[in-house]
Length: 347
Image (spheres, rainbow, N blue to C red):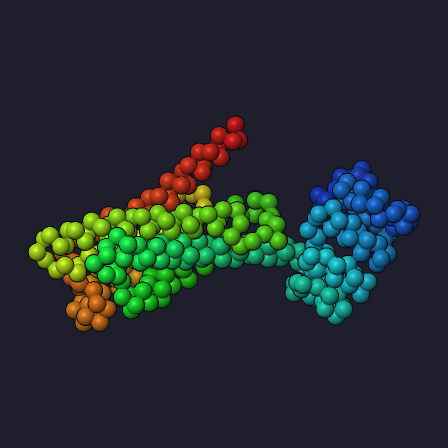
């Protein structure tokens, strides 16, 4: 608390708010004036109440906290708060009682002048950032698997040709990738979203294992699909049926694998069965609609002709579904392993 009020008033209000104890030290402006900036940096870690301060003192306190490596959010409503609001990482002005100068200097304006709104804004920001990372995990992890599968076909099947046509690749990018990814972007907050410590504002979007996760899941998706591709190529060449069916099996497996990945990627730590399946109805709708559309491409003749797919008998379709679930199982097993090692480290 940084205020121009008397120290006794500041201490009493801070005690009521739980900012500090009734006997905690209060640093007043006269004392702060005598401190060098280095001495002030030593004080800011243990002092929570500043009283009888001048505008320049607020700026010095913010700078001292930042020098100590703190991320500083500053609230204020007056003209004299503007320098500190501008200096802080997040300046927060009051929308009702705040001056125009303080609003211009701030990054956030509380339209209702309610500090509780700051907590809601922080929670919403964390949810948005988490969903952006979730979106990237799904899109790029799946795309890496697709690229590796397409690139491996000429290597392993020199005479088989590419498993996917350009139109089928476009279908996966627009529909199979797009619809579930958009649904993941509106995933609601996890229960512990406000309990975890903040992340560094300078971190990369691929930090904390996200980049390695995308490579790992992409490789798993590719290995599973390539294994099916090799088996289905031999199977369709030797059954006397349509020798091109293996391409549709690869196409279907890739698409359905991504549906399982979309369901599993909703949480980094909790299993899919532990989540409320109806907390994000958009994802259920996207997965259901995308899976249905994929089946229509196989079993509706006009669509089959347009997209260059081939009819799959029930056995071939079941093989595609069973193989595609392996990616979902892999991601879920990773959560169990991470949870197990987390418990081991806490012991």
